[in-house]
Every structure is written in C-alpha cells, then in structure tokens.
Image (cartoon, rainbow, N blue to C red; front, side, top):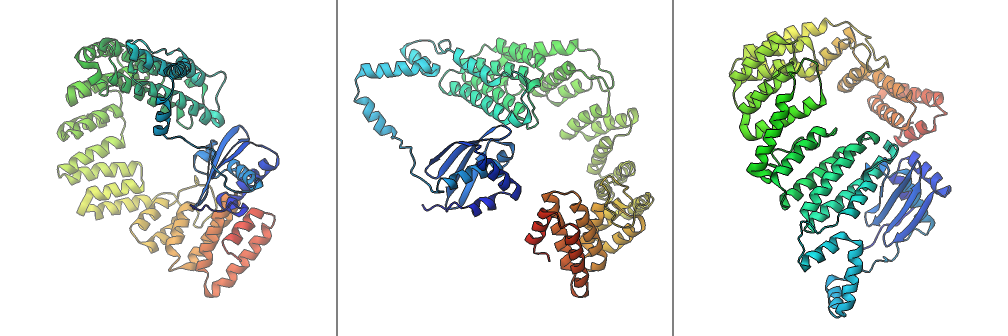
Length: 566
C-alpha cells in the first residue's frame, strides 16, 4: 500500500506553531538520539526536561506520532514528535525496508522437531535459567507441585525495582514511572496465565504493599497510582479465583491489609471475593469486620478518622452483600451525625421503593441539621412520585431561594407543573431584587458582580431575548452572560451585539497567548459577519486601529490573517 510523503509542511500541519519551533530547536541542538527507521516507522528518544520516547508512523492517511511526554499521551503531536520527524526528513524522509522477518510457528516447529533432543534440552535449560515461569513449567511437567514450585525471587526484585522510590517522582516523570510499574504488574498477570495462580496472588499482594509504601513519594495528579492499585487488586482476585487459597487465611489477609493500608486497598473486596472465600472464609471475614466495627468509638459531628472510615465502609459492604437493604440501613443509622448520613439512608430506601420511610428520615434530617438542599431535593422527588406537587414545589422553592441558579429554577418549574406561573412570578421578583452591576460589557473578571446575570439566563432559557436584554440593561450581568446575550440578539439587533463582541475580543487579547489570540479572532469574525452594509466601514476602522495598537504581537497578526480578517 502506498504511503504519504513526509514533508516539512505535513509536520507543520500536525503541530501548532510553538511546538514546531521548539521541536526544530531540539533537532538543531542535537537532542534527538537513538533515531532508527524500520519500514514505515521511526523511533527515537528526545532529551527535554526528561528523556522521552517517540514513535512515528506514516501510512496512506499521513503521518502519526506517539510520545511518552504528558502532551503526547493526550494525542498531541508535540515538540518531541516534531524533532523526530525533522530527523527523519534529514535522513531522506523515506520509508525503508522492515528489518523484522518473523518465522511462522509452523516453520519453527518443523525445525525444532528435526533437532537433536540433547541440543533442545540444553536450549530449554538455558531459557529456564533466565525465566522462572519456564523453569516452573518444566518442573511441573516432571511431576512437581505447581503450588510450590514457582521461584518468585526474581519477579519480587523486578517489582521492587519498578515500584520502590528513592527521593520523589514529580509530575514530569510520573508517566514513565507508572509505565514501568504497569509493565512489572503485567509480568505478575502472566504468572496466572502460565498456570501458577497461587504464586501470582502472593506477588500481587507484595505489589500492593510496595505501592502503599510509595504513595507519598509520587505526584499522582494523573491518577496513575490508583490505576496501578486497581490493577494489582484485579490480578490478585483473578489469581485467587484460579488458584486454591486457604479461605480463612485469605479472609484474614483481606481484612488486615484493608485496615493497615493508606490507599484504600481491598476496601471493596465484597462482593467480588464472596465466591472465592466460600462459607468458611466469609464467616471469618464477617467475624473480623464486625469485631473492628464494635471497637469503633461512637462518631461525633465533624470527627474524621481514616480507620473509622475504612471500618465503616467494610461493614457497609458486608451488610449490603450479605443482608440487603435493612442490614445496610442498620449500619448507616448507628451514628448519624450529619445531613449526609441521613441522605445516604434515604437514598437507599428510595432505591427499594420505600419512599414513606425515606421521607420520615428526611423530615428528621431537615429538623436536626442545618438546611441541606440535597435532603429537600430527595424529599421533593418522593412527594412528586406520590402526586403531591404542592409539597414538592415548596421544597424546591426553598432550594431556589437559598441558592438561586438556573438548575434550581428549572427544578421548581418541573415540580410546580401547571401551578408554575405563580412560582415564576415570585422567582423573577427575587432575581430582580439582586444588586445591579455594570449595564455594559466591562471586561472584568468572571468573579465580578453578578448583577442580573441569573435573571438574564432564565429569560434566555425561556426564549425571551428582548426581556433578557432589558434585564441586562437595567441590572447588568457578568461578561460571559453579556457575550451569550449578544450572540442571541445579534441576528435582530446587530448594533447591540457588535460592541460586546469587540470588547470581548479586546479582553481576550490582554491574555497574550496563542489560544487567547485565536479566541479574539473568532470573536472578531462574528462581529464582522454582523457588520454588513453601513457598519462595514466602522468595523474596518476598528481592525486597522487594533492592528496598529498590537503591531508587535506577531502571533496575534497570524491568527487574524488565518481568520481572513482585514
């Protein structure tokens, strides 16, 4: 199949201008290393703030790239990909012959069958010396017990090398760190597939210990630690299901590790491990969790303990798994110290269709704790299911009055049904009473005075653009609401919309970065489309003045040119 031709233009098209220039600087500085071409692919390492691995491929659809840097992992054709592509161009830019010539299994088997048995034995022994799995499989074939024959020492060392940290792993190197961790965990998973699940279960537990110890030494902004923990737990469960663990010892291990971990290890063991534990293991698991539960002191409001949290979650899972809703509610109701505790009980009752019981709890929660919109919302839902719209509307009104928002307005509307006009009048009156803000787009921060922003949003949602414009003119609103209003009004009242679009473009330019300039160009394009007829000259003058004022901003000029603006 024919492949696309690699050119500098194709590399520019895949990257933004900044990435291209920085990638070109990397290439020019000789920071591309280990560059190789294999068929229609090229690989390299690029030295930046760290050393990143790049792989490029070219096909009929064009050039594509992957990089181990954070941007590359999000699918961006980053500066490291640019540098590697330029190295490829420097090497001629041609796809080469693939160096890999795989031999089929059938041909290899035919060859092996023809060899001397002594030679084959020597080859297997050599391989088994470097691979514990091969060695164990050979010993099992000779008659050894598969549960005890696997030598896990080398793999334990591999896990230690991959997971243990000396110093600190920052954000820039966390991806590479977790990639190594996942590769090591993949080797543990392969032990299950090779027929040694009991050894794999022990290795998975060891992995969890190491990850728990490493947790405070790595930047986990990308969530790599949680993913690694989840994968190790998944391998452990798979191994236990495939092997023959002692059920009582397994129960003790699950509870012990859950209680000692800082990373919520095995917190959700039930119901997944139920079948593996069997009756004896589950009985021991229940005994240990209930003992920890009895030893917990009564919880006080605003009192948090990590052990208390873990024990409570374990007890809730046990109750839900083995006793159903009533057992769970008994656990939840032991120490109700907040509105959230009430909410969890009521939600569980509602899930079972027990709305009346849920309402009893919700009424108690609303009486015992500070007003909570979540309790009111759930109570309103219960009343609506019973056809009690008046009660539901009162609760939704209380939420709207406490925290006005478009969502709480729409919730009130849905609850009130045909009686909404009276509630709407009250809601609009409340919104009009909010303090006024600037009556024009003022290029101020998002956290500036709200004015009549919410009233404008409500009226726009209802499709009354003229009323929304009057509300904004009378009481002002935030810039983002002005901008939305201008776009809604532009088709019928361009003279109102154009000044707002131009002011928003000026505001974007002040941020002085490529994305902001691109936003400004889009806003100016919108204003240009509205500036027909007699307004065209005024728009032209504005653009001339803008280009003159910002003549030193090359990136802005490029974005204006790209948008086709004069």
